[in-house]
Image (cartoon, rainbow, N blue to C red; front, side):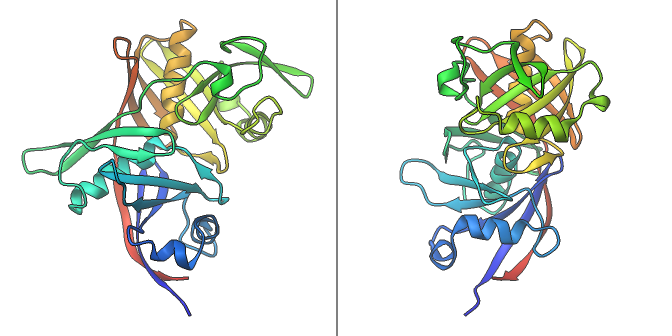
Length: 285
């Protein structure tokens, strides 16, 4: 017996997601989320997306957010996905207030929709929480407490990376020319490097000036994507820690721009950017 699903596809800077409302648990009862992610995210045999995002009930938050990558692996958090999530919830009156408390695998995340006088959403600002710098918590195997511009050897070549967790692990490396960076090859090798026991996202960053960064990303479990919100946050933190940027910067990604601010008083990272509905429909699984 087939199950017909109602879905919505949204994108944040080209990072695209399939949204499914499973507050009644019927979808998970029919098919596991990892299987469903692989099936629906196929760009040839499914809807096509970087991942699926589940809207779930929460006991102690406004709502619960769970995300699975296109390969079926579960991610802790996704900044671009969270902006889309908040916009969808507010526009569909699932959550009635502009600022909401969301349960994620990375802890509580607080997005806030920014609307005009007609209540049309212009952008979404997300409190991404505090960056985690201790290697043991990222996790990253190192003799140092923190890895800032730390050497990492791959195929007899040494790269310098800064490791950060934004609820998910990131390895940030700075390059002189982003267009010449071998994101696919080096990204894949760093993602699966033995020193990252849970694998990692990899950000390649070119510094334009103290307030502007250009970035390409290799996402854990998804490969090259057009944008990564947590990655943009990690890039700003790494650039600031290494003296390459101030505590606020515009991060230019393949899919568009994000405004990232690190509030040093609260130690929280704030990310502001767009979220867009692509289409909605039904699919039988």
